[in-house]
Each structure stands twice: as C-alpha cells, then as structure tokens.
Length: 116
Image (cartoon, rainbow, N blue to C red; front, side, top):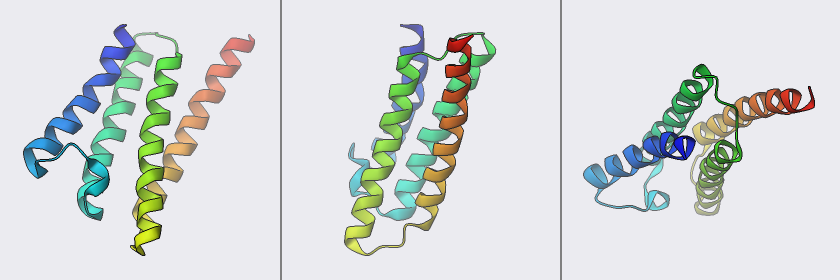
C-alpha cells in the first residue's frame, strides 16, 4: 500500500498541473511540447519515487512495474497518435528509449535479486 501511495504522488501532481494549466485531464489531446512537459513531470516524478523507495531498502514490486508500464504505454499511445497525424516525435522517441533502458536495467537487477 505504501508503494502505491508513493508512486501515485507524481501521477496526481502531473494531473493537477495538467488541470490547472490546460483545463483538461486528457494528456493525449495536448500538442507536442505541452505533452512533453506533462510526460517529463510524470517520468521524473516516477523515478524520483522509485529512487526514494530504493533508498529506503524497499524491493521492486509489481506495483512499480505496473506504474512504469502505464507511463510507457501513455508515451506509446501519444507516439502512435503523432505518427498518424504526421507530427515530429523525435523528443518523445528519445524519452521512450531512455525510459526503456532505465526500466530494463532496474528489472534485470530485480530479476538477479530474485534468482539469488
């Protein structure tokens, strides 16, 4: 339960920012730079919460993996929408690649701990 609350904080902050600035709860309809601001808030907040849990010697749980997956899925949805509309998606692709690399590093570390 503690992990769920800690990982929910960046999501809530991101959506509060989205509502106050753009008056919407749907990040997919935002234009490129606006969506990237929201997505960076989400990703950086998630990894800050992840490192906070890691520093408290908490293990990586399914909750952490689900949050990472949902954030990645949101980026993929926006990437597909950008391709379909013919918009430039270079920065989003770079963020998604970096997110994949970081997530794979942490998941591989988690799998190595489970094996030991």
